[in-house]
Image (cartoon, rainbow, N blue to C red; front, side):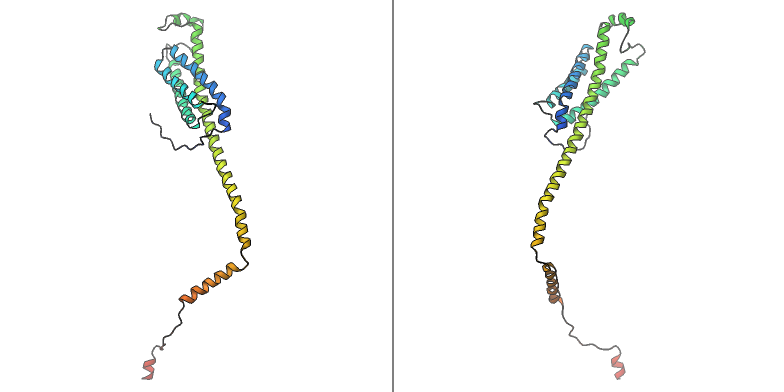
Length: 220
């Protein structure tokens, strides 16, 4: 699946917001890892494997006591997509006519014991609770990633504005010094001399003879 996105330009150095969010991202990654265990427990091998890939991407993003901002953007987007799919799957499983409630009571214990994958009542409730926590963790990772990305972009824009302002302040004294060293009226004199030189080089006086219209007929 290819998602068209505009070019993303962020600083490779993580911002303070990214470094502060690193412990929270680690905690959310651990919750997603529990979600992986829950998916394998329900024999959802393909879904659990894909979710495990997200966990490894998160660990790679948060490696070396830093935050890879470029990987963080991709990781957050993938977590958002998988969180939406997991939520839809949970809703689809819950609304079926013969489905067991997410948090079942004691009367559902015999049905759980006779399922294709036998489960005890506390196991069913615990696994569904982990499923909900994992979905919330995936959405939370996407939100934190978006906030860190916006903060990094704003910091980069502010840094560029500060550098531009500092450059303008550094060049302003040089301009003032150059204007103070110029003698008064020299610019105007140079301009007038240039105009005079330009006029003298292009102006030619009239040297022909003039005749009045109809002068020859009157003399006749």
